[in-house]
Image 1 (cartoon, rainbow, N blue to C red):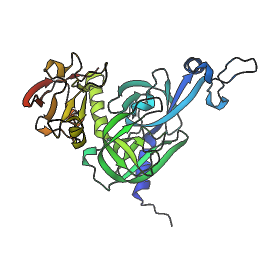
Image 2: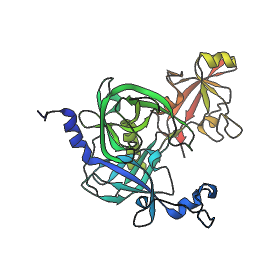
Image 3: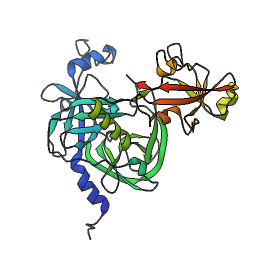
Image 4: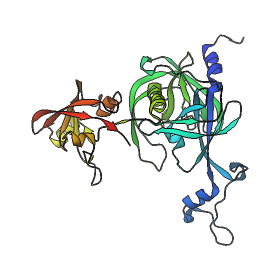
Amino acid sequence: MRNNNNPVVETVKNVMPAVVSIVILKSLEKLEKELPLDLMPITPWNAPELRIPEEMIDEHGMVRIGGGSGFIVDPNGIIVTNKHVIADQDAEYIVILNTGEKYGSEILARDPINDVAILKIKAKNLPVVPLGDSSALELGETTIAIGNALGIFRNTVSAGIVSGLSRSIAAQPDPQSPAQEMRGLIQTDAAINAGNSGGPLVNIGGEAVGINAAMVYGAQNIGFAIPINTVRRDLEDLKKFGHVRRPLLGLRYLIIDETLKHKMSLPADHGALIINQGPHAPGVAPGSPAAHAGIKEKDIVLAYGSETIDPEHTLQDCLENASVGDVISLTLLRNGKEVTAKVTLAERK
């Protein structure tokens, strides 16, 4: 007997119309310029030639090179997805609605720090996914991931629970990109596959609580989503300033733990050691707010305001709640003495 009162089924029915597929297209000419000659197949005339299967080329000669997911958050065509889905500056991004309608898109904002992007299509009266409150999530709460799995299977749904909160991972958007640290993530056992990136993670009430972002290769049922409150802030910035604003401190550092303390014979068992990370990566960025405040390499940042800096509470975590123009107080350990630095946060360019 069919269960017509299944809450997951009802949630999916309500959310699915606002979930979109994003197709990544590029001209054959640009692809040929980007692909090294020695990787191209050789024709019978010994001339390299890029061969693309016909099913990957549309009527305008554009080649499909990838895909992802997104979801509508405003009935006037505002869509959110992952920044890594639309990372290629030279590509075109076609949005396909649940109805099958196709639209070209305009990229309104990219937030590389949090892997969020905002697009717009020329359409009105669209269904939306309401935004929830990711700070209210609890372990064990039901979650549903919706997206375009593997870039092939549209309208894919997987259900699970919130397995962890405030997770940190080093994620690699693609094999050619360096890994970047992502913090404050929602961990879920709802399956998140390649192509699901950018789709919504919703609660049982049909509210988006995250954006599907990453999975752990070689593991089962370990997926991560960006908290929706980060997206909400980006949307508010876009509406108010016309772009996403993120505060800049201007420090490179290593978080101190027992291992690092003993390895480097440091005078503190917690904090952030300001240190350069190569000849072109100074610990204190020239001209940055930190430089103007007199912070120096080898200083140890012990606290941000009243918040102690340690592996569970990094400077990056503290900056998540800061805004451009805020004046923050940092407690530093310098030559065995504690000093205080007042820093006025600037806008990250």
